[in-house]
Length: 480
Image (cartoon, rainbow, N blue to C red; front, side):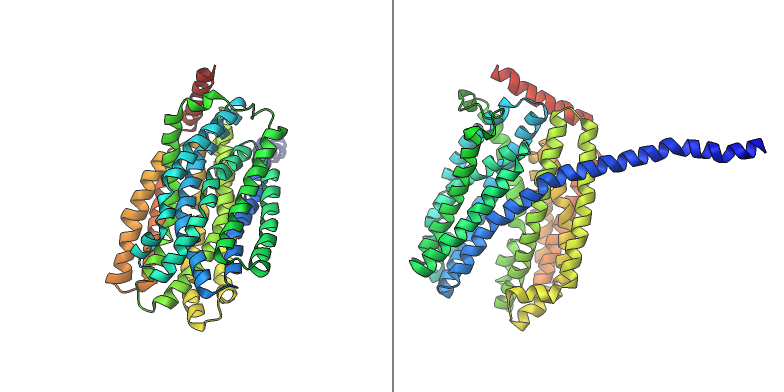
């Protein structure tokens, strides 16, 4: 009887530590989730706000003429997209370096990294200017009509100030983001969007300045955001991390350039990948309907990407901070929690796409043929969004760990050696049209996700933490 009485007691005692450990994991996961979304939510809002400036400009251009709308749309979705994707990718190098330096409490290094990024990225933006100056022949080369190409070329030239703001806009945001100062980014982005709507209305409906005026409003709004962020930083908002301009910024530029270029290639290849669909769909049967339907799907995908890019940024910051602090277990735990959150978000968003496919299409068009094509794409689009919920998290881990060069090679192989060829074969050889092309693109993303997952699974977090500490230590010793 005594032994029988003891058995339940012993079982309860043995369960005690296990229950406490489980509760501890849940608490840690909840704490990490709060940290993640404290970064992701403002980042998502700021990305949507800045992205919406272009959408607002296109909407106002639609109140001019069809040609004006087409010219603004092409200039922003082709010329600006290339510049935007590459420079945004280059700025992710700052997420690695500033995030790890902040985690290591080497605060003065953040200002040095910021100034290095300005030097490297501004020079790069100057080298990209021919893309804007010769926009007309470039657009004609890819099949754009002469009339549209010429007006788009004019718009592109007037968007050069916007292009030159990217090196400062992207780096200032990442500088603040790495030290968890997200509120100021959200406030500035929201304020800039509000002002942009007002001045766009004035320029289009009151002053009637046409597409040149629309381009100037975008230029003004982006530079306004740059000056506000810069004013906050130098005005005392970052006393620990901004100690003024320094000659140290001119040292170590080569190492910074290598990381920036690999980062630019990594993200620009991802940014341009699905835009290939629009170019290809224009060469197929029923091109007008195909282009409209694919453009709608890409627009929906782009809005969803703003959410996942915010999660990418948050994951990169959390991983970089933990690695910089030498906390290998913390980096791994942050990664696992980010993946779990991404799964939940991906399931919700893909369910919305599949469940409300027709309603979403009707937001963009009333053409029944286009709506039918978008409905046919719903399952593919939903799966793409679900897959895209994982891929940015893996890229965020890569950015936080400094694996940009490796991921750039993986992207080239997965996207352009696997995805595009399979898409062309399925689209043309097997005559599945745009849907076949999309299937090929998904296959490339799937291959990339699997490879990154394997890399992540085999990652030695302790070695990554030691590598981050050596990187920060090298910067500290060279600075002293």
